[in-house]
Length: 634
Image 1 (cartoon, helix red, strand yellow):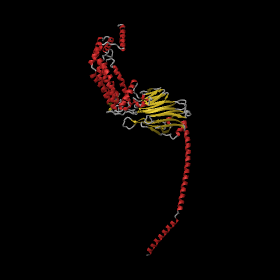
Image 2: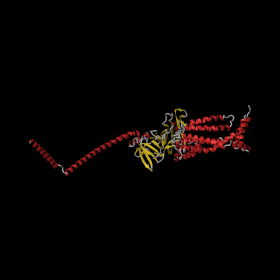
Image 3: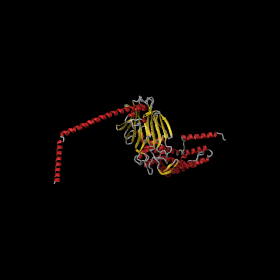
Image 4: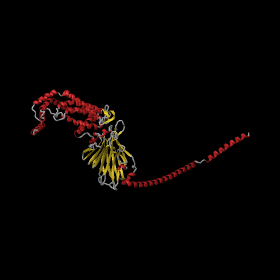
């Protein structure tokens, strides 16, 4: 009982003690006023601590700024030892390898702070080598080009702008992107490159000017601007592409020239208004409104072995003097990075369309005024392969009257052949007399022996013009037809495991078809020509030569065109095919040898008056015969 009683008392005691503690805590808790005062003290403490931290930070920043200024002064002094008056440019935030990109729907250009020049130029409408590769044609990339101006300073330093940093500023003016790159010698002292890119244009403005540099630069002689470019290969055949890669330029008020296809060549020209580093279907062109004097141009072939040298085609360089005017540089120029498309280049009206090799003289006229507009019209609404076929048909139909004249002349000579043989036999021992009597026979019969040659000569310019037009037609680039993937390149149907000299390591089908057509064309015409034209004494036997040419010409065609663009081979195949058809029609349905013979006999009965040419020939023969008669007989 005692134990239970103790336990109960103990519990009651604990409860009383716990209750007393709770009451004491309640009585001693802070009032609301005391809580507010405590909170205010804590906030004041935080503010004080923040002020102290800020003061310490400000002190640290001030010290750091003083140290930066000291470091910049040391850095500036060190830079002045190498850069002279342009040391200021190396202390600016732009003095690092950053880039600025300007672009439109056609072209994308990347300009580097270092050097201030274009380090990447992409053409958005054109793909490299294979149209499915997804890679744009890049005229400039991976340091294959640079622009440098050698600065001669008053303290006898030579500085290269390609190694110095320009300050970029990109703005938009009237819808044009304007990028200024300034190489600074001070806040308001600089050399400036100004790029202006318009919407939907391959041509951009490029101005080079200086401001307040007359006290920094030596202005007694021109600055030298150096432009380099190593041309990338963009087409399937590096050897074929390289035939059309060239440095071209305009000088002395409209004259144009080029460095040709030699392995390495250097030329100097005065009053140069544009310099074009031309690739097969693309071009990088520098144009100026104020002509450059004494420009040095250099080209070097980089394809020594087409199996190994497959990345670049040629190395180009132009050294251009920039003259000072009143102690400053001020040149208004343009860059063109784009396709070597005759129609696009012609629109600029700056003569840069001349870089497209359409031929000289009459060949160029045929291309510019016949082939280019006609093919451009057809290809605007017809697939390119079909356009070539229709184009060829139109050209051949237009030339058919000339073809008819040629065949008619051959037919007349063929009818007259027996009488000519009689003259040859009668005067076989007197060549001069034989020639005179033959000419009299031609005159009486109303036959001109040259009539068959003249139509053929008229067709030669059109044939040569086609050899210039199709390799230059960028419209055909990466356009397929039948088995040909690219009408501007060869249509390889078989890849050979070995290389045949002058032929290549592939077999193209269109050249084979063209060679077969040429063979049958020559087979058909050679017989008539042999019968029509009698062999002259002392002259080579043309009959034997023509027989040999029947086989040599197609073989030459096969080797020559195997590496050429398939568009040209297609044109020649269709052209010869149509000519064969026209010949068959003329021989069977137009030219009647019986009527021709009757006409010749009728002509013999009519009185004939000699032309001035015939009279002159007659007089020359008579004089030659008289001179021969005066000579003593041996």
